[in-house]
Length: 125
Image 1 (cartoon, rainbow, N blue to C red):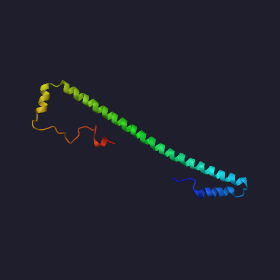
Image 2 (cartoon, one colour):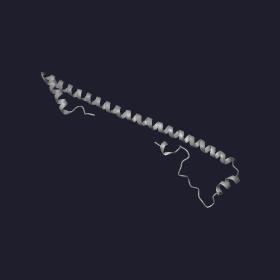
Image 3 (cartoon, helix red, strand yellow):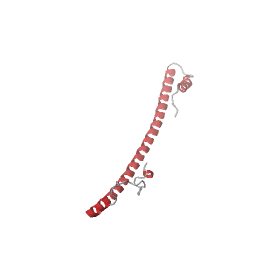
Image 4 (cartoon, helix red, strand yellow):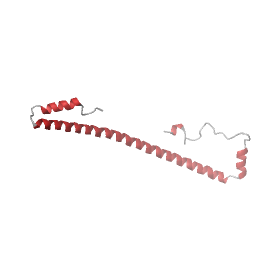
């Protein structure tokens, strides 16, 4: 992005306006050149701020999409946990004790292989 209102640009604009004018016309020409420069700078500022806010809106949209994605994934996890909880409620106490003591002396260790795609590296942003 180029900065509008460079001193050389203002000087050449002022010189072009001042040629052939006399007295109060010189002041009016200088004033007009300053106003034109201010308007150019305001135009550049508007363009730059538009770019910033467009990028900001895109980032916000992307954040909203990620939030909805996480919400959906959490809903699937909640549904799955509800099914597991219901299954555990319907099992007999002896079955739970048998499951817990089926391999005595070893602690439960999670396998390195994931069985679902709910929290896999590919599903993360």
